[in-house]
Image (cartoon, rainbow, N blue to C red; front, side, top):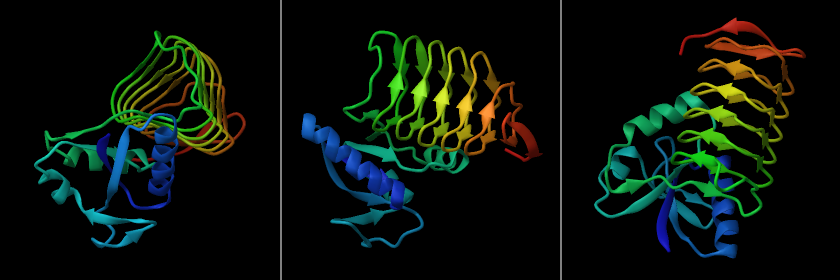
Amino acid sequence: MKDIAIYGAGGFGREIAYLLEQINKVQPQYNLIGYYDDGVDPNTAVGELRVLGNISDLNAIDYQLCVVVAIGAPAIKKKVIEQINNPNLSFPNLFHPSVSWQLDTVKFGKGNIICAGNLLTVDIEIGDFVILNLSCTVGHDTVIKDYSSFMPSVNISGEVLIEEAVYVGTGAKIINQLTIGQNTIVGAGAVVSKDLPANCTAIGIPAKPFRYHNE
């Protein structure tokens, strides 16, 4: 059993605690010690556990600890992760027991969260700190780069390139052989049928950029 802490004491953090519980039911792997969060006072109760400190406290830990970053917004997630610089910390990939993928051809970096009901087919590359929330599908030869987040029931067709720090809202669909530029937001329920540029928010059917923003 490895000690693990969750950074992020909000609703998604509590969902990650549930995910760890489900993983442990199949094979005991993790001992959840509590939460870290820079926006919540230390010792605040979160369910049966407590907030243990902030990023500075994480960076001061002098023993081996696994950490999972439970933040959906890619820009905030990236900023938090870039502030964690303690060699005693590691970032395991978490897979709900119901996740289905072809083991030999789907490649993962570190710190990924793959929630219940996900289906990943073949020859897929997923970078670091990617979130696939409940019941997403990812088709063949898709590449998803670091920090991207996909909300429940997103469907990604084959041969799609998702650049760094993309956010895709609940129920969105991405047609095959497309590229979505870095830092782009795809609205809930959108259908992406053409490439999307970087640093935009796109909504609708078909999805079109309606505003641009800084990184």
